[in-house]
Image (cartoon, rainbow, N blue to C red):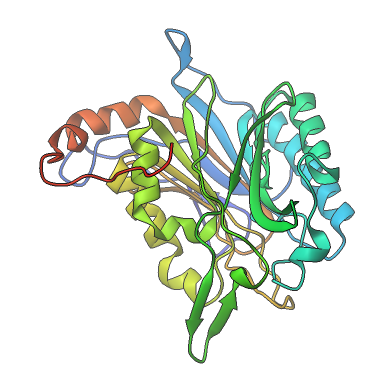
Length: 332
């Protein structure tokens, strides 16, 4: 289902596909809706020791200037997503802080710290994998370490342990005359490593916002066996309508993976106005679920059997000409 733009927070169902050049036949169980509690948990299909289908939730959170309120509300949404059967939950970029270089030093904290401790506790309480909008459940926060600031996403497992930590490696330094100028490097330092984590469902690769523009990162994650890429992000009113969905679909098709993006909800009064439209895209490049601009939880059931079918039908990994080109990792 895709969000019906005429009805905020509601969804409309797409019909069954037909196997043809337009794509493999399938039907996705996906929806977007505001914070509520009426959706039953999905049936989980078991294949061997792995689960072929699992529910992903993206929390499109309205961010305020009060860190404690942001964290408390994020935890409430996480609990709601868990009651609806979500096994992996992602928060948006900078979910505990307004987005802006002037805010990063004020809101930055060490990991583990105040915000990540709360995320660890709620991940354990709900027995989920949590990506924390620059930490997990997934998402990101400004992180302070050894006098440097990073845009960091932390991931917590169902037992509350820190499974992974990813620091944004491509900083958002752009200048579009007459529209937007932004320099993350004024206050942030770039990360220097990749980050994946394993679940009973699949391996997940992490990026943050601007990282999505760099195809090589997604290719490396695909080479490492990732089947889902999650990007907490906050595109704006210039880059959002132009590239937000385009980049997600491109990364999904190029690498035959699911791609999910978790954005803050739009606040037209903020100094930096986020685009919103948190989205899930399948390996065929189809949008399975997408939020509007308002605060919402986006759900999508990730079908790994369909991913395997797509890779079998169009075996691009086997067809790559490694004798002519390659994406090389300079660091492990």
